[in-house]
Length: 488
Image (cartoon, rainbow, N blue to C red):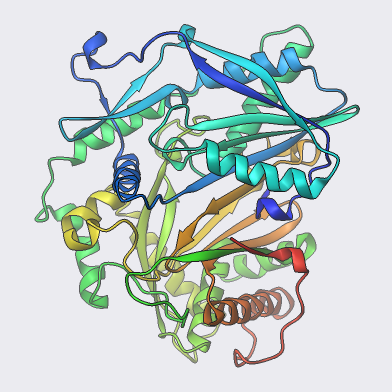
């Protein structure tokens, strides 16, 4: 399972059906029995606020995250209808409306029995290209942070197979939720087809996680000692946000259309060797990749000390691994990757930086941002291109043992940006990269050269156990398939 642009996904044409979620009653808000109501998480509140403000200026900040997967054989529509309803009933955050109450963002869930799912025929497509265009437009039009429901569900049906899709607003999910979606829906569907009820592990509500987080951290102030890690990071760099160190050709206070690009850095066999090379210097594969990113940025003119943001899942802190929600904190990480350091020495720095970062996982990123950079917090986006690194090993996700059969894929989209974000995934097929960045001539050159330098670097580690010799960014690059570069 990997992440790549929807435009790169070949979905065979067929008959398209969507399942509409309908409510038969009002949400169960604070005036309906819950004296205080549940509060949204800091991530959700900031996301919702940006949507409110951009809508008021008729300048929406649109985005979505989607998952697609395959069903072999003729689709049993009644069974999938019941499976989709059970999925929504199982995850409380999907049944929520978000409302601003006295300045706080409240989550008001519908009761399980107050929901219905109704299939509706949409159209029949005889062209994969027209189908892809339709789905992209459909996701963009139908997903609205300020309107319930906050996701859409459908399938492309063919005589001997079907492609199922679900697309979500980020306010109800994160990247690690996508394997949960696939596992829950298909496990229920297959059980229902056998005439059984699905047996799924417990999935605690994200609303409980969000509410507890907000109640715990809403009262802290900028003098709280738990913010000392953030303060020291900011003091050393001079800014709360670590800048992306290469030229993207962006102007201050301007948002740009995006390029959504994906490629494979290492195949399965190369990735196995890469992992062994990392383990030989007491590093995990993501550390080897992060160190490689730092060295490539340095060789391209960036600083010797790597400073960046890294999203970290909070699912493992308690039993949230089977839940849908936004269980992501973002933390700063810093380590020395100066010229002259070999692979083992850089890995020592990465390991120390990561260990120190994880000691401070507790404080929510959005709360630290609000308290320590209030002027920038008032903005609708990060203030300038920010250095960002994300890694997920999809082989460890729920249902990974059946991914070859289900063929799931994740797709993200955003209308505009002012920088670059890269996500890395490892799956059974290798190590992959998906980047969204501003559509400028400088950014296309910079990101294309960076991607090729990174590919050569991780290949060098796999083949020799160390970094390759620096190569200028103007070196010739291996041509990429046309479909790998998608303009947003």
